[in-house]
Length: 270
Image (cartoon, rainbow, N blue to C red; front, side):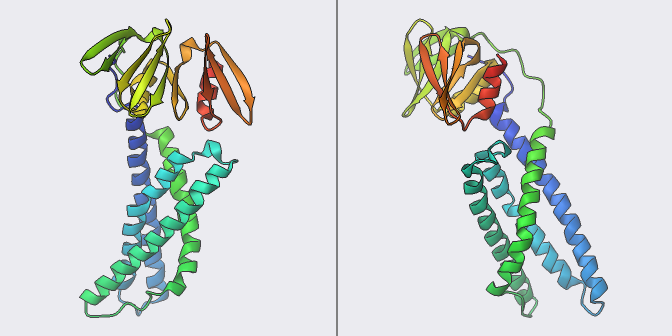
């Protein structure tokens, strides 16, 4: 059983989300404030509350839906920008973000004006292309903010020492094995299968993503959506073409997908 930083891998991601969203809220708020002042300077006859409503509603919905950019960045990080996957993830995310952002602030404005006994005249589908053009820049800035946050967010308290054993539970049965004896872990439906150095294969109910956060501090690396390997047990890396590799762990071979470039870099370091 391992002991370590309770945040784990997912905790680091959530911290980057919080820090990135905070930066976005401040930056977008600053831009909206400047826009309010610019509008009032150009339209001194305008009641100050109107541009405040316009920009405030835009700020609320921008921050509310900025998480779309963060989610897209998790699925297609900058390391994949030269591949089709980057565009396939971020282009639909951009469109979704813009539609929700624009529809959101339009609804807020209509509701606020109606509550004040007035009518908001800017609610028109014809305005969407103009707003979408601005949202392209906004989406890019949001992605950059989240990307930067992943490198700047504090990592919390130093992780506690990890045990050199891991408990594999199969129902009421418990198998306590040394981490060094675990060659790899693979998903098997609702279970995960541990491949041990002595050839045994032990099943435990659970998700591979959960095991990834538990075993990463002990030197395990995710090489494929279905595989987690013990980096210390790797004996060879064999190119398979198209950027894929086969990872040798003694007689065991495990796939390393080109979609996990960080894993390749980690295993090459030894």
